[in-house]
Length: 258
Image 1 (cartoon, rainbow, N blue to C red):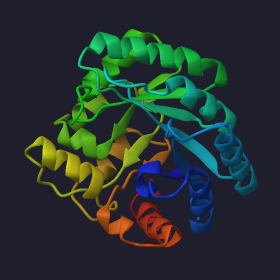
Image 2 (cartoon, one colour; image 1 turned 90 degrees about the horizontal axis):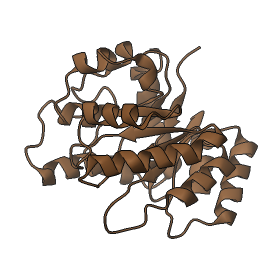
Image 3 (spheres, rainbow, N blue to C red; image 1 turned 60 degrees about the vertical axis):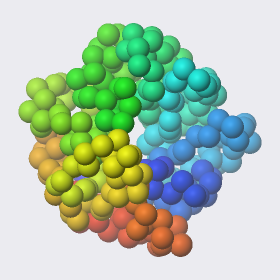
């Protein structure tokens, strides 16, 4: 049996959550990621998304994001409640806090709230955030002591943060419940603006760039793959179903057999 392939929420941020499920189903994806906007999400949204998932049989691989920061509500409690209603398997957590101890404390709180629902909270590192390395994410998860914690590797962030593949291989495989996959040119942007633009607009479909995707999948076998291809090229494809089908073709060709 092959890996579970999921259409990441970030690919289609212009599509409402309930419609995201329908798009994924129509395009042939077996799983989907859900974007949670705490300013507009309500109980009705949760019920509609849950019903659409039940009707289509699509798996909610994850829901995102919880991002604590010094200047705003991270909507963690509301997101966890929504995750429980829709049956999301994972919650994506990262942090804009510069104090790692505060990030660890909030991560631990989120894990405790999610644990009764059987939800795994993954800690993602991004080179544009203070939480910016694989080792830092692993330390936060380890220090938290959470039984439902894990580290999320986005292979673009892994590459751009300078973390070598040997660091991944040195860690327990069960630390990584799933992976986010895309591709990109070998050359890394040299400043914050470039890194941000690449992450939001410049990702490539797997096989179109030079990232060591196969090596990562061999290092972490069997886990689900979420295809996080935030791309201006894809967004310019007006029909979200056509967009999703286009990405699924690359996902199956490049990664589905591993």
